[in-house]
Image (cartoon, rainbow, N blue to C red):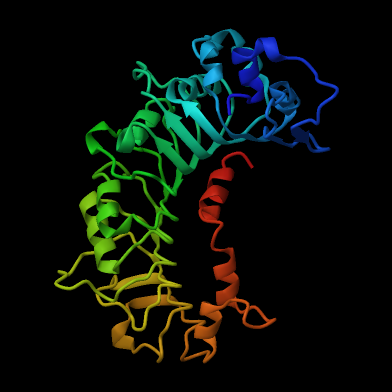
Length: 373
């Protein structure tokens, strides 16, 4: 992970050499736009990453190895390379498949603080050891989008608050998938003043109660889009209660790809956020319309469920755009296609959506990319 081109200047000056007898682990496209490195060799040539210094998008996989060997360079002051780092074109960076000491990760973020990086993705990482003391002021990058997938932290649920301290304010999109802990100590979490998109999809063990713990009250004042696909959500009313407790006002809520119950036993009526305009309940296994939905919506998606009859008007909110495609009362074969998307050569809309559902957070990433597109 630390072999990002400009970090070579900070941490690996002795390794800047060219190896003529080994296969290059890094490939740069003909347009000098995207550079991909995969260091799977037992003795990787880290210096190959130098060619990525001209790229806009950089993706680096460390092959699952520990990067503890680079700790000796973690105390290097990146300020001496500030002009060089700032001159680089990189705007999107993906780092993955490594065991990373927290001290080294902080060194990376400090170096990135001098870059013009806008999107950072961390994937399949194990962050070990204690996080260094919080700086007097944020010294890391001014990101618009931060995405984390399958990243574990020794510090448990405190990881987000600690990571947040090393980022400059202004983050607009946060994607967290396959997290090992989303129970954030709210006292240690600063307010995400500019965050408009929060995607907690692909956390199947989260559930209604976990959402209550993850959405710290008053920490997401600008939130507009909340995605909870495949996040173990149980009932719309349970999600509503979590939103009310957190005092958030999203305009769009995605609860698709959860096995939703119509209502929780003994649930009290919940008041939905007044700003909510769009609600996605597709692929939720619903056999009837849930009770207690928001009274008025612009968009309600009930597609690809198990509705055996058309919902009555009194079962629905006042809604401008209602989607019911892929339910058995409209398509008798809908259930078969939902259970087996490849049942025939013709792939219906519900099957297509199911096949592509693994690309979670795509909308959020696109929203973040607009910042420099």
